[in-house]
Image (cartoon, rainbow, N blue to C red; front, side, top):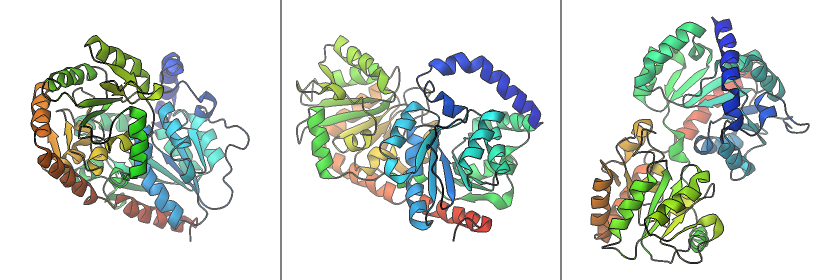
Length: 425
């Protein structure tokens, strides 16, 4: 069965290769994606090697609290971080650089690429996240003697039949995992239903709840100046927006200006290369607009946050936040990040990928809106009631604090695996 997947992976890769060469997420780091590393790239002598993989920048942030725990608890450990996307690589080499030993682009899930990568890195522990189930990578790491852990595990209920069909054709990769650390009970039940061994499944929570550090007031002042905002000014921030959402948010903002003329709008598109289009959309509505990367000295009504790693800080400047990906079929984005900053959080109806976060926030500082009209009404009402805004923000912050701790629980399980392998004291 495995030979079928190996053959199919090469065939599909050949078909997809032209797209992968051009796509903004995958057009960099081609040598590393085939398992070839520059001399000196992997200096991993010493303690146990822990290889953590997250697909994108947001996934890597969810891993960062576990990295801190590993650093604190595993003497001399070497941390390798891999990612699929260019934005993830930029995040790892910038914001996360002090925590890790090296960052690489994840190998394509091809037999040769994964074997070369596993032989070069020689991990004692491979940590995958969410649904990053790459059969060839898992098998290659196993061949090198690594223990393999899935963290923040999730399996969509709408895709279970696809998983079953896929696993029946290629063999079940869940049985090669040493631990499946799931976000919640429902996810654990789905993993068991897909054939994961009962004794390897644990419910430990979601580490993204631990990755929500509050920046200092000094950072806020610096970013406020860069965005062209004044202290005390009311600000609506629309974070992690996708194609088709900015038009709706800008139209809502235009209507809000009729009653709240001082209101400023910050839009942070999920993909920063879309920033010029967002500026253009604002200007088409007669709004003044600028980009953070170019400065906002003219104090435009709309400023586009087109930098990586600043959104969490920017949320501290908000009066109220709307999180994107929720007016499209994308399935939502991280609503807990602004909540942790003590800000009321609004989001649309499509939150399928973040239903656990919705459960944490609804009724505790988070409000789900049905459509742009509903968004306009709720934002308008809240702007007229500053005491309610402050209360909602504090409830949101408290809700996030109450669900933390998954990173420490996950690392405790990982330590047991490393000790069993003789790789940690």
